[in-house]
Image 1 (tube, rainbow over the protein chains, first blue to last red):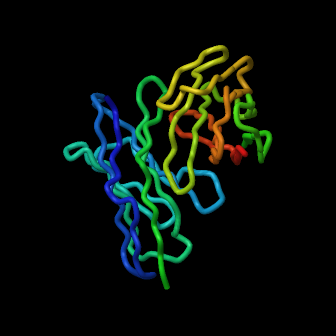
Image 2 (image 1 turned 30 degrees about the vertical axis):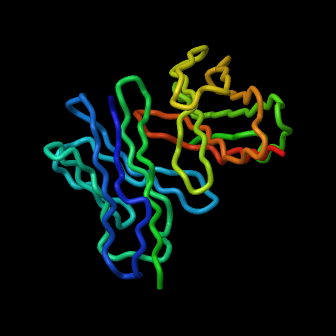
Length: 112
Length: 110
């Protein structure tokens, strides 16, 4: 069945360092859509960025990700972390029945 | 733009009690969802609904009922609250697979 794997439960890094949060997926669908959602403390998740096109970089609010069907990956990156990036990040994969499969989430903690 | 409202914002119940959470959206989205989020943990799908009067079970449907009598509303019932249960219940609606989340209902069972 469809699934999303986020290998890191917690990522802690110092402000100014690059961010990379891993996301791999499994699906039988040949043209998957992948999403990243961000949830700040005491808020609800909201869409950060999305991708429909293989090997095309998508960017929003300083973050970027590229869907790679060859490796079933959609890793989230940012060149320089800010304190305000501290949040819970979810990778998500919708299926053809309107169900959305979320990964377990990665808690990003950015320290001064 | 649109908005999703969830009522109540805070819900305190007693063990064994039947509790109902409500969600309304004015996006005119077809699909709506209920998720449970335990402290510091991920989103677990309880029920979703593709259209009015449709119900689809998620991974955590046992112990819950849901109802979608109108396109704009989706309610969730905890059939028997468990002692010391604490969680946030998030409602969402979607268009083109993008999800929009409500502010949540925080449940505490005494």
